[in-house]
Length: 319
Image (cartoon, rainbow, N blue to C red; front, side, top):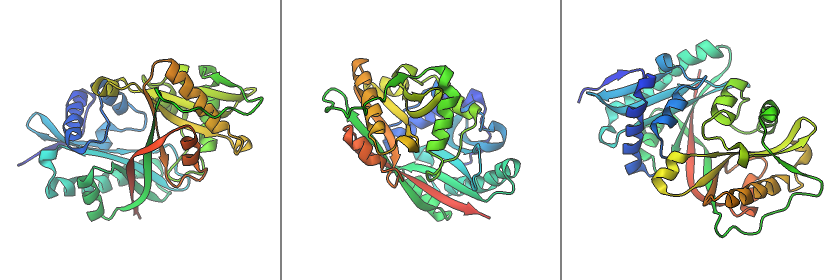
């Protein structure tokens, strides 16, 4: 069957939502996206719709999608983030080969405009159930380089939570501390695999300016105007609408080096979970690298989180 490939526009948001829903019926990743969710993503500052997206159309039906997302920094490698989804009825060798070729060609173009003197790597994430795209990536020379896990904890039977150390006082997030929180995030995650610094525009779009951000359930530890620790939370109403479960996502959890090893991260996360329970949430989730340099899995396990599923990062260096 002949498909028509063209870049996406913002007006394709509803078609993209239908495509994700069709894929989820088979892949069971647990992710559910509304039209509004996907439009917000496509409006991101690091996305070039005309130059770095593609869609496969079967008549007026979107059946495949690819995206190459520029990063804010190359320190020292520019790790372009790739995304894709293909309708289960169209997962064949021709579509897979087309996407793999498009990833390489388009990423080179994005890279040349952004960080032409830096090394380039392509990074594509996939849920443990997304076996077709994993096969496509392996055939194109990508290697499974990292495993991330989604961890969850139920709030109805939440175990006793770790306490914050004496003298460490959590305060609700306030937008006057937005850039200080960004600085703390960039400092805390600077040495993490696959992480680069955020610029303010991307930070506000993806994190604190997102329609899903919950400042009332996000907490900071401050030293004057400096953020020393943080838990920043999001609530995805589109997922709750499908699952019937109100889940608070602890999107960013971090502690500057000066406070590490004192139980601040687990205490601040525990404080957040108790606030989420009081606000009527059913569950909390977060995502973490299993090889996290700060042994974050143990921090989260102390708060009651347990591994629920896995995500894999596939990497291909390009010369």
